[in-house]
Structure formats: C-alpha cells, structure tokens
Length: 232
Image (cartoon, rainbow, N blue to C red):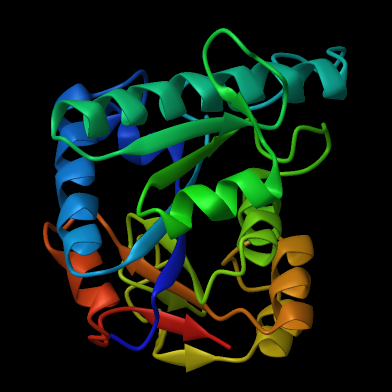
C-alpha cells in the first residue's frame, strides 16, 4: 500500500442513493462496509461528508448566504451521524467531530484529538465543513487533509475520474489519468474548488478522483490500482 492515511470526501448525493436526496441507509451501510475492508488492510481514514442530499444553497436570492451555509452544515452533520451509526452497526470504532460545537451529539473538532483517534485505528468523520460560512466542503476536505497529515485526499464521485468536459453531456469528453494542480486551475476543470486545489498544491497532498458507486472501487484505490484520475 503506497499510502496509509487517507482523507475521503463523500458527497451528500452519494449517501442519498439513487434519489440523491435524504439518506439511503442501505447505501450508507455499503460504503461503511467497504471502508471497513480498507481499514482491515491497514488504512487510516478521516472522512468529510457533504450535505447536498439535504440542502443545495440559498432557497432564494434574498436569503442570507451565511444562514444558507449554516443550514448546509447541519445537513453534513446528519450525514456524519448516519455514517457513524453505520460503522457502529458493523463493528468499526469511529468518532464524529464537528466544526461547530454540538456537545450532545458529537465531539468538537480538535486537530490533535482527531490525529490521535486515527493513530488508534478509529475512523474519524468530520461534519460542519470548516465550521465557517463561505467555504465549501471541498475546501474543508483539503483543510482537514492538511491538518491530519493525510497522504492522499480521495474524492468519491459518480464518474470514473476527471474529464476535460462533462462526460455525461459530451461523448467526446477526454479522461485524464493524471493532471497537474496548475492545469486544473488554469483550465478551470471541475475537480474541486480552486481554494481546495490551491491548498493541496501548497501542502503537496495528491488528490485522487474516482467513481465510488461501483462496488470495490475504494479498495482498488487503497491498493494503488489505476482506476481514476490523480491530481498532483
């Protein structure tokens, strides 16, 4: 195994299953089972979850952006708790940490505590993004990856890598096996937002993009198989 410590970014839509809304608990359990297999292989995991299956931004043009973002953070917390419960059901030791203090339901995020959990073999799930409005969960993923000293940031998506244009709309879309951070930014390729890409570039944390909907793909990534796109 080339890398040992991973930061996995899961979108809310992935947890929502085929409807991409609410929580599909069967899908959540499937993902948890696959992560369990990776942990049994010796991988260490931190997970940042999105909230798009509950909230996709301002409900109208007059809504306050910060309020909208805080609602989204609550959505990520619901996903984090659901994923944490799935791990409990299958016997995986985990902790949920949130960027906003919610002491009755989760630990408040503290970098050193998160690292210690991971060193003890626990999966750590990060909710609430960065804990501040105006920052995406992509940026939160990059930030947490830097803080916990992850070897690789894995972005789990519904497509099998990074393309020069949307493969769902264009049949001639070209897939990249490998692409540089600077090219992603310069060509405005949709991988993660520019803040997240820039942070990973500064801290030299590679990003791997792959399709998590196909069962077994996460394990293949952990083992170093070439099934997606590496941003480095």
